[in-house]
Image (cartoon, one colour):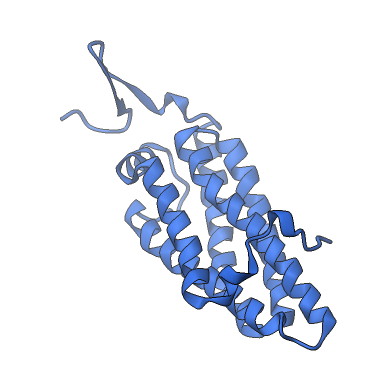
Length: 200
């Protein structure tokens, strides 16, 4: 069982303000997405062999924006209801959840670089499996503080389960090696073209 670790936990004043609590994961997630390059990410996604039921790449941006916002709202609800509580158990659960929340957000943010930039599907899949389990536990912990906070994480947990399937499926279908999914466009250029793209 995890405990509250202030040194690695997002400061409480962030959770106290609904705008800040919601904006933090949205802004961080967007920043990571743009640092990896949306166009490059979509091209890599399309170049990989994908498992059945994989969605088009355009859906991920809007979906993650909604999930990040719900995540931030859950944190706001849990913190503002749990910390002022006269029940010491609820206060402890709230603080414990805040540490869990911070760790899961970090795991969330490193998945995309693992998968797309560094082309490490094994590490990315281990990351997202850990993230899914941790977030499920977070929903349970904060659900004891406030049911709305717990249920606000339900879509996120569900999507993580689906994303785990996609990550593991893509890794398996591509032999856990993404490096052979691009080749030089020409000897005179350092640009690359993905093997599944048509020549223009």
